[in-house]
Image 1 (cartoon, rainbow, N blue to C red):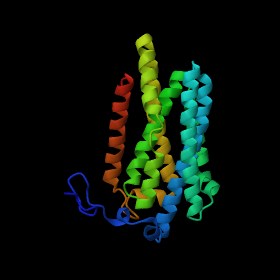
Image 2 (image 1 turned 30 degrees about the vertical axis):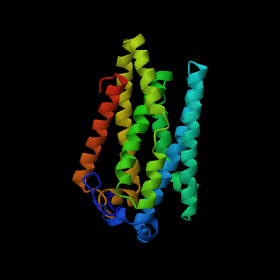
Image 3 (image 1 turned 180 degrees about the vertical axis):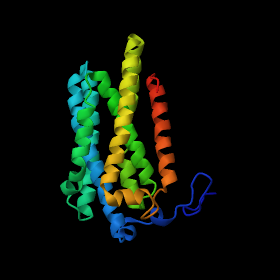
Length: 246
């Protein structure tokens, strides 16, 4: 017998508070609205930056097939950006104004973590982007249903994970010494990505207030610590999938 949609099961926890509301109801709280606009703005700029980076990384691709693969992924990232830009406009926000506060921090992160070769670029896209995605997924669980659906959709893997793992593992198998260099690089990315995420949140009052439970159904301070522990654990698993030591 089918389980009614509003009846929780063991695999479907009860949804309450803001997470049980749609955008129309949840956005009546001005601080919550401001936090979501910040979140969508940060995501939109992140997707635009990912498109630019993948297009640039394609120039380092060793084969035409690799170049085409990265170009396809860049196209998918740009489509995600378009979805976020359209949503911001739909809710009455100017997309570029919503993105602007996050441009400097994200551009700074990419300058500090510019890859020196093709393999470092792959590890950055897989490790760095995945850390950001883990963070946004944690936040998405506490958003209204409309915002949550959009955020999770734009965080869908564009195919880079499988592609990066295959290429990096093959490179290490061919030249084991590469593994040590890439492991150091990935650890640096982890530190830079977490620092960048914390700076972005700290600089935006509405977003930080939402995260620590001051509005809607945010995390308490203990949960913030557990959230970063989960992100670190997922990073360790990705490192293992790449054949690298965390």
